[in-house]
Image (cartoon, one colour):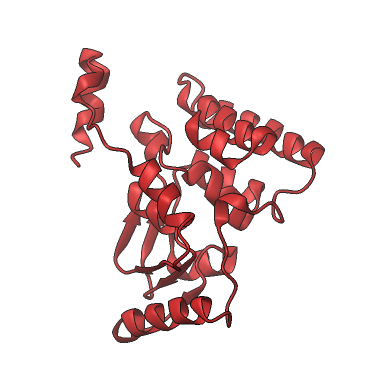
Length: 201
């Protein structure tokens, strides 16, 4: 996928230039699968790549892998469920800060935040990812579907307070564009009406 298409759409208004993909459907099907799926992350997991990893049941990364949801900097919002899944894996405050700032972090920080389950040596990445999947399959590790989690979200009043602060941050980061506020609206939709509703908004 060539991200330059976003500029072409912006200049022409021609939405038909956007690829007709349904990665969000793929992510949902994968996440709801009865078989465990573990992401082995090496190098870059940016935008849709990170969103795909967030839909997996666990994420194992090599050292210094770069992780980011930079879509807002490109004039769009993360469209494959990243707004919903990251919030449920690390908490609303950390997720909105990372998304609104289009912040790129390393796998080690992702592990500290809680959405990377393990950081392993490059040579061990595939072996450990397979082992993690087997451990899930045999009940030795939890079978977690991030879109269904609510333990990191807090109460509705807490979530609304965080989103209010996020709107203030959006005004500082991008006072003349709308995508940051639209992104917060999508996150709020998922908090109030459930993760799938947020993905579909």
